[in-house]
Length: 253
Image (spheres, rainbow, N blue to C red):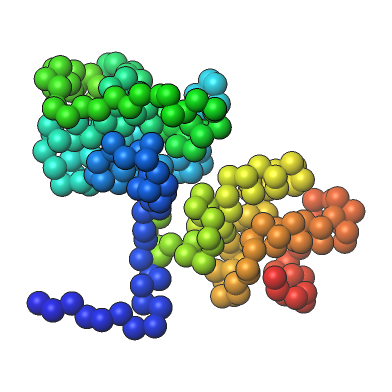
């Protein structure tokens, strides 16, 4: 079977893993294998989903679930290799990009994905030693059932084409009823400080409006602020909801 050529923007229809290039280019991460970098990037992509699922601990730290079986399936490797890759990223045996916390009782291990850029905020990051695990640790196999568990809760997956392709920011997420409102976590937090009444409701309205009309906007954060200001000006902070036609009269961003 022969693969076809791409034409025009055919490549934009697919979902992609966002892999931070600094993990490939900076010498501090030179001890990481390519597979462990790919695994970390997969985990990193789950942060926004976990936040929307409210998987946050008592210290406001977002966590994810990523079982050993899932590592084996996604990276197409056996258990020894999967455990080695996890250990390579782990805070105890590896570089420290992830931290695992056992829950016991057959529950899957909680995984904290750590910020890869935070190391550069300190003056002495070059002094930090990178612990490698060249050989699979036999002790890992003994603790497999406790460390990983048998299953993980279902994620809210995004099966539609990734609409973030035109947004150059690496930390964007998809919000709204139809998962087509593009915002960063910083965008969402800034909007929540301004739109304190019902930000999620406004996001859902924008999501539904774009889906029903086919209209697009260059900046969804600015669009949400514009809609909010229209509401505030016309109704003087009352909770009356505008119709789609009210927004259609203005110029689109």
